[in-house]
Image: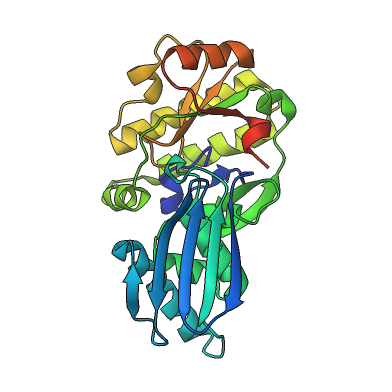
Length: 282
């Protein structure tokens, strides 16, 4: 999510990008329910369940319980659907990057079962649902109140000046959402963020776009009581720094005028995992 983090939970518009990274799910008939999840480094999660979806064996009880709850919802919504299968989920990215292993799981189960993705999301991970919507989007999306309002193409005059850098501190989105839900957000805050989003999708000028990034950072920083990332770590950086997602971890956005110089700057600061817009975004 580029704009609208946290405030999207209060009805504000958000602007979000679908990624080139994702997961695939293969389902084949089996005598008992076996689920295996793989990352680039091999199998990281497995669970076996009986016909009543009781957990028989697993290497991660917490993940297994979430998956079982999702399957129970599917069984309730689609009682004729056979759930006793062998499932294999394969992600083509590092899971600790925070690029949507949960949201793509929800999307895959929804696509396979025909159960509404928001129904599955509300009963499991929670959140606004923008990330689940991104899982099947072809372009950037304008999203609010549980629905994609429209898909948007961001001009290259802006995207060519974007660099996404991994901060290396994965955030627990569910915990951050719980903390935020007790925070006061006014109608004027939502209106201000919506105006920022509208300006950002209408401009082709990178400097105007950067002003929107900076204004968004100011609003969210004040509301959640967190120091802006640029002030905390990159005060000497010439252009804009924008936190993404739950703030404080995962990836952040840096604008630039020269990609190579920007890469050199963040490498000198110890941040070596980074992607251009074309490398990361669909």
